[in-house]
Image 1: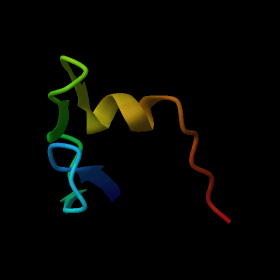
Image 2: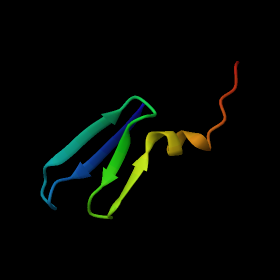
Image 3: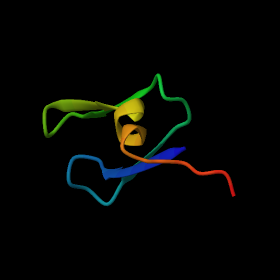
Amino acid sequence: MVEVYGRINNTQVWKYQTFETTSEAIEFEELGFTLSIATIYDSIEFEKV
């Protein structure tokens, strides 16, 4: 799961989003790009313990 917190229009109001599947994507409107959850997890290696 990925959690994203962001301010709304430079106010004291915060926006909270959760993304639970790798098919979802986070849109960074102010920065002008979208990042898929799959891309975030691509560089993480998981090991069985």
